[in-house]
Structures are given as structure tokens and as C-alpha cells.
Image (cartoon, rainbow, N blue to C red; front, side):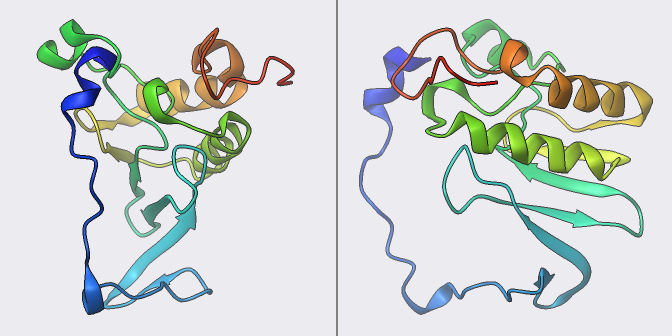
Length: 151
């Protein structure tokens, strides 16, 4: 997948007045039951959305359910929980903390930016394992943003 990355768009998108900062209290304007959670690591301003009333978690790219580094996995959409995409996650320490915070929510349904949604005990067990074994399961062995001194 990294080989096709040069074909991705490289220009910023001007959203102008259509974008506003989120309230500091974690609420989401116009979505009363939802809360936003700062989940940096994959990107500095990354957030996830959580609705406690039914346990729905929209994790974005904080965790994903298809390994983006594998063309076969992307084509087949095999359901398997992973950390954020390896090809662009500049802060693995923050990504690890973000996954830990998401696992603490004990969501019932997980929706991610890449892959299909997951739910139930298998998803929660996978998320807990990812949080516990993040360095082993998610952090690449080498790369531009990898710090070998991670605990």
C-alpha cells in the first residue's frame, strides 16, 4: 500500500467557515448523546466519537478493522482489529494511550475509518488485547516514526 501512496492527494482542502472547533467539554454540537474523545497518535487532532446510550464508538483511524498495509486484506476486508495505519502514524506513544482510553469505554459497536464494523465480546476482547499488547501488535519494527525505546 505504501507504494501507491505517492498517488494520494497532497494538497490541503480549504473548509473555510464550514469548520468550527469542538467545545472543550467533550460535547458534540447538535448530537446530544455523543461525546468526542481526543485520540491523537495517528494525527495530532484526531478524535473519536462515543455514544454511551448504546455503546457505539466511531474510532476513526485510532483503531482499524482491516490491515491497511496489506492489499489482500484491504481487498478481502477481513475483519481483524489493528492499531492505526502504520504508513502514517507519527506518534506511537500517543496512539497507544488513545487505544487504552478507547478500550476503557467497553464499546458495544465499533466503527472505524478503515474496514467493517465490529461488535460483541470478540471485538471487546480484541480491543482489550490491542490496548495491553499495543507495542507488539501495532507498532512497526522500523520506520520514520518508530521510537525503539517505547515501553
